[in-house]
Length: 192
Image (tube, rainbow, N blue to C red; front, side, top):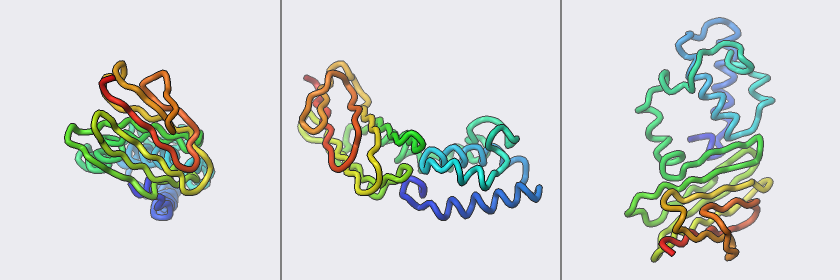
């Protein structure tokens, strides 16, 4: 969650510490799956493979560290809170090395408005807002700093009956795919 909010230094400090412990052989083997997950998340949100190469934790490039995605070591309960927002409701799937972000909105029926501000994917900072209005879901994306992102936005639901537009330009599918720089509005028209 800190990485998505642009708080990179706490993650870097932890990775430096874990790298030193790995090099000294003082890191418990049971932490291997957690390190795999941490490395994947750090890379997905920051795109900083060079930093992970400089501070290896024994998990990059097949150098041990266990298998799986780390969920078993961290525990589903610990991940639930973070994933409820970033992966659950917003369905965020960052790919910073490719300068991409996928949003798969999974809105509860009573959802009104929600915003994520100061979200960072790689070198890009953005704000995402959604709101419901009669028969529509509006997703607003404002890139406030950094390079453009290839943004894919999807609203979970019956895609066949959905009309989608980006910046008032109608699209021929149930998803919006575009280069996001500046401000954009994605409109999902339901039931039409």
